[in-house]
Image (cartoon, rainbow over all chains, first blue to last red; front, side, top):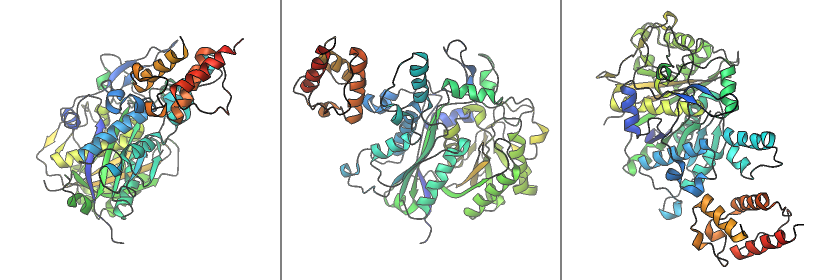
Length: 419
Length: 78
């Protein structure tokens, strides 16, 4: 079977800034951080850390009370993002019988690193703190990792594959890549893909704190807490989020007159197979080469890389070393930015958020910066770090990197389409 | 609170159902109570009134049947 071209026809996310997709991208171009200081009311020791939340998100308004009540927040964010992407693609919500389409081969491929941890944590509190004998019968379906994709399949009436990918920080990049393969092979004409996560569960946030990889900050300094590639970088900033893309067989999209935001052309995934948390350039290099080859691209075709760039001491130099290995002498002209400096690290949603940023960069021919990068760490030198929004540089193709704890790497390659 | 009051409160809070539509002859399914929501409703009832329903309980079909079941169990309480 010949390979199909894969169009991106829908983009949607729950923005930490509270606005729509255009507002989100505009704020990234402006270098505006969504990071704020989070202080919870947990007793005896509240969470107090820089964090990215979606305070304007109203699950009941987005999804309706009955549906929202059967979901943990990660599924609420994910389903809301999916609805948004679906509407953006011009596809009708509701069951296929209502609109005449046969969606039995359409599917969902979702990423989440954590799943419904808030539901489980609530259960633990009921059992251990309040001393209750039992917990809500909905706990299992609220907590299960495949809750988001299951709800999305049911709500949109999609009868093909419905799967979740749990690969830490690469969860949704891998979910997108696996969806891409299904559309490209002809197995599915349309795939809804993306990811969502909510790391606010007390135990989860404390676990990340214990790893000593979180950036510090207070009310005043939190917006500048995440500083990828910077000499004074201090660690990553956790965030909640949900982001979704509609991938569609190119001919299917053209036949129905869909707007095409961009083209997904390559996907590479590898494992460092060396260490759980210490990344290794060799594994990332192989993922980059695989994505380029998969898309029929050479390094010279790439005009922008949205970096994984978490702002950890270990991760950033390794990623730059991998890019320098792949791009060789041309690396110095390779535009790179780490937008986690503004939208934080949404774990299982991160790959999808950054895929959207990369597609919008190609569509709008504009690169959002790495914010707060005043003094470059010499260990991260050797690429063209974008520190202020860049317009006017032709962008033909771009990569989005996602590198996970566990050593899993995923690289997605996108191509701009003529307006 | 009586049994119908509890059902009305539950359905309004969880499903946004207007309390005046929760009448004896209304089928629970038509009010949005599927099998999962029935588990939640039973859980709420057991919690609030300190009773325990047997696992092989036949699910009530209407609001009236649910009220009868709740009233019967409450009357059997010591």
